Length: 295
Image 1: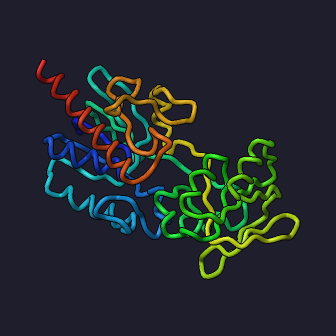
Image 2 (image 1 turned 180 degrees about the horizontal axis):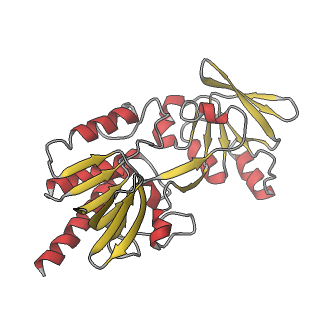
Image 3 (image 1 turned 90 degrees about the vertical axis):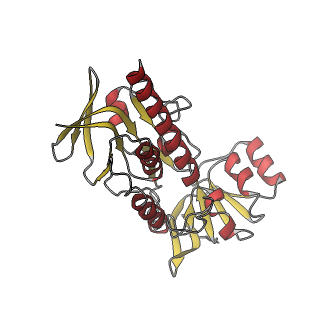
């Protein structure tokens, strides 16, 4: 059985960031990555210092390439099926039934966005339907936008456009909510939505159940999310009410030796945040390993 200091589950931005820090700390690391990145559908990524506008795939390619000098870091395309605590670490079972051992485990497997069951929605996700105005708001600034969310999202999008329509897809807003939106010149459409229409791969219209259409250039939504991997639950990690994994400042979960980083630990999600959280978890892990060996 191969032994590692750290196994990282997930080779996205948090996982690769952690692998870089741990590789430079001379730790033997295995990164398990099946290549299913959450934002692979996005044409561009924004807001990451020195790499504004790069594709997510390009950032991952560079990240993997820059791990090559660190011979103690291995990349593996096989996923992790199960993890079990042992007296001095963890036994990890991969999807191909290979068993390995590690002293610390870092979960960086991300989350899955749950799209509304609206015709055409999934096809436009990451193209003209987005969840983060910090990542994509600039490209659609001052354009007619639709919001699938609450007051908080409407308040946020006011910074990018004054032409906003809040679509509730059948839900009824309270009088206070309606009054606040009206005060800020945000229109409301409470009808059910049957589909979204595109032209040349970009959003053109939102079609309501009554047959009426609403011309919009982009939609911003706060989709429901679930953990991409069941490992955190399997290991007994505590979760917040919003479904994120609870961690301390350095990524330590409620289970000793199990760390987590990236989108799975915080509802505020962006590449720069994932990179930071991965690096912090790596520092926490290396510090714990040093203390164990020193004492």
